[in-house]
Image 1 (cartoon, rainbow, N blue to C red):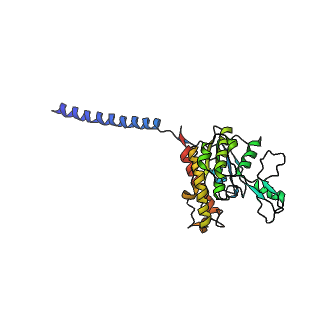
Image 2: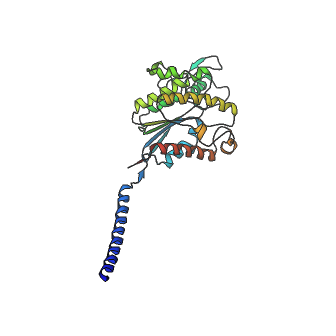
Image 3: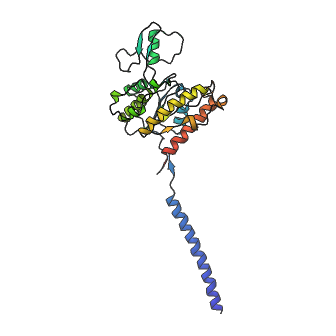
Length: 287
């Protein structure tokens, strides 16, 4: 009887010892399986393009670069910029069109909005477009090869049918030279294809305009956003829907927009946080 009791006691302690050993081995296995995540942005090159919202001091582009520890940032944004080319008549009656950056008589780029500009200043203004910004970037030999590219235009563009363009026709067109670059649809495709052809390994995104305080501006923005989305969807290019998802709305515009259009410091933070969140969700990976 005593031997049986002692055997049971011994068996019990042996069971406890094996159980503890098993738990320890399980923990070790978990440690082997669990691997830390690493940012795919650290040390990489970021290129951003857009208008005054992107060009502004401490804009989403600068916060994105700093927070995600990019190695360098090329910010090709210029205030007042639009997507497409355009044709205009100056105060003196001269008809002008958006030039290409490499034209021998290229006048330059200006974001001035002073009244009654002379012909030269007017030419510089209408050169201020995504097409020319990208042409300039591709011509700069010191510009780093980008790993990530973000395009952010649309706030300043017109929203007439002639400017919006034919998305179906644009998506079916295989020759970039045949695209109507006086339209948003044609220009968005031209910008995406031109950059992807030049930098096939780069990850490219489009950031959509923010909501504004003005109801009319928002209605027009939605027309332009619809065109941009269709082109991006047709080309499998992801976009950040800042209009619908950033947290800046017409209702809270006085809190986050300094003039009903441009973000104040709080608005810049919300705008940047949204784009950072979207970019991280798309690009963080486990080693």
